[in-house]
Image 1 (cartoon, rainbow, N blue to C red):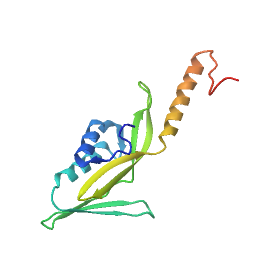
Image 2: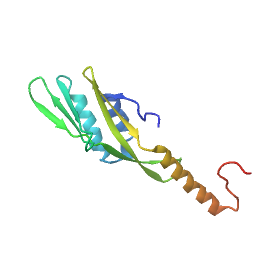
Image 3: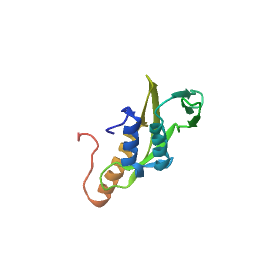
Image 4: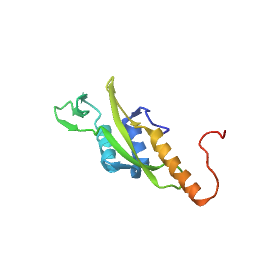
Length: 144
């Protein structure tokens, strides 16, 4: 949550991915890290970005000054697997991968998709475990 929707430089994004590599399950965290590192390695030239609203596809192309070029297709969504509460089983969470080009600088970030629903499901699961193990009445809200 701390860096959700926070734009990061190429290097910062790569470092963040490296620190959280096991949490990225789709595409593989190592593949996503490689993408970020490839962008960081290219320092001179220009980026060309294409985004299609119809099918949500993204395409980012790098043109080096020596006329060499390469391209990377960015996934629209990534899948994370992280525990919502400490010492709990991981929950699957979707995130949109975003980027912007401004003044020759590439920024990357992710936007969690409906994180409140993942939190709600984890809360309900914990609630059910507590109810099964005790005779306590668990209330949602205030008692009347």
